[in-house]
Length: 170
Image (cartoon, rainbow, N blue to C red; front, side):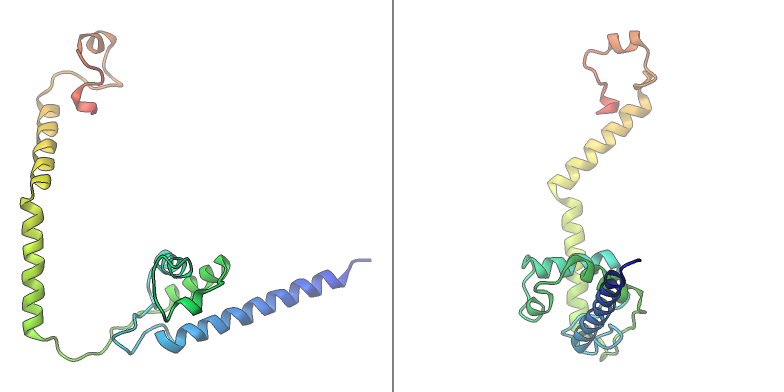
C-alpha cells in the first residue's frame, strides 16, 4: 500500500509555498502598488519590468550588494525560487505610465544640454577617436587586400605571410 503521508506532506508544502508567495506579493504591493505600478514618484514601478532585471535586483538587495533600508528586511532570507516567482509575477503585469505634473522646462533644457555634452564628449574623446581610426584601418585593409584570410588561405599564402594570423584576423 502506498504511503499517503508523503503525498500529504508534499501537498501541504505546495500550498504553504503558494501562501508564502502571496504574502511576498502583498508585501511588495504595499510599496510598489497592488499591480506593481507605484503611485509614489520616489518608489519605482516594477510591473512590466523584464524578469531577469527583477531577479537581479532582488538578488543584489538580498546579498547587500545594492543597499536599501526599505528593501533589506523584505529580501533577507529570501530563497532563489521565491525571487524567481516574484520576478515572473511582476514581469507579467502591464506597466502603466505614472501620472505626474508637467515637466519643468528649465530641468528639461538642463537635462538635454547635459546629454548632448556627454554625447559630444564621448564622440571626441581620444579613446573613441582611436577606436574609430583603428576600426577604419582594419576595414580598409580587408577591402584592399588581395589575400584571403584563413580558413580559406592556402598553405603557400600562410607561408608567405610574415606574421600569422594576418591583420584581417586580428
